[in-house]
Length: 209
Image 1 (cartoon, rainbow, N blue to C red):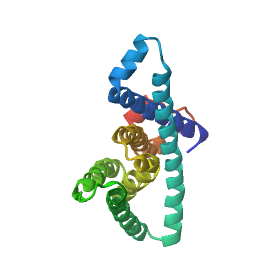
Image 2 (image 1 turned 90 degrees about the vertical axis):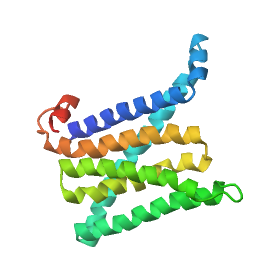
Image 3 (image 1 turned 45 degrees about the horizontal axis):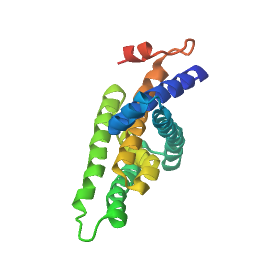
Image 4 (image 1 turned 90 degrees about the horizontal axis):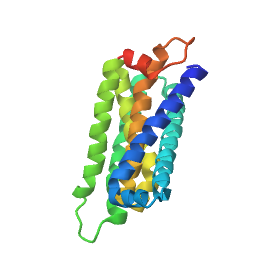
């Protein structure tokens, strides 16, 4: 990775995550934003864009943090297989915590924990899909790290919204996080294949599929 590739990764991720977050933010409160724009009041729309951008930047920081952690993990455990097993354990803990602690802090008296399992299972299913694509385009050993990144890292990035326990806020957060993280994890190996002497473009990345 040279500086051009890093700049492309940052810019493309920022645009995609912010755009996705902006769109979902508008859709979740469409009537209010339409009314504001009709009255030439754009403060709410601007705040939606800023919020989406903030979540996208959080996703970018999480991605580079994960790359560092991944290298440390490989160095400490000296084996891809062992490091993958450790990541599987952490994935299970993250999913359990996402279910258990949300139920513990926010469930009404007598409310079943089963309803709180839906979100972790949906996140796991999405992570498995992304990991399947990653493995298909790279190698078998990339499957577990991709699931770990999508599930564990995204959950950590999502914590500020989870603490509020507001469905609209959580959706506003998870969409740019997942879009940004999915793009980053799936574009990384394609960037590595690009020659270092030219500025990468979206067209070049698509041609790597």
